[in-house]
Length: 161
Image (cartoon, rainbow, N blue to C red; front, side):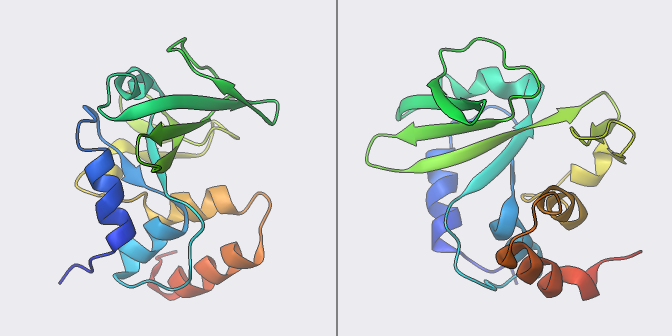
């Protein structure tokens, strides 16, 4: 039985008109994999393929979109965002905010943006509503915080080598 998380369901409603695949990321993605909430969460993060960023603009109910460049939020007007930019904040009328993380893909693989030699077959994302836990943990490993360690501890026993 799949766990129901009200925050995830609300975000799915906000993203209902998104015309591309997306995956819940961060701590919520870990919790979705586990089927239970392991800790409180500060935000909702979803990952999309960088090539799909254009699908954010026509999303219904959006009051504005910002991207982060050089640690500063800037208004996004649809210009193509290239690396190192990878983080957007989609603001909805009524107060909802979804952080969107742009992920690198080629025809066959997901590609880790910090090291292009680290790849995962694209098919590993098929049918999932969350990032594969190994991908989520890899992103969390850069500047690990106590909540990232908690996420690792919660999921480690369920990961293969």
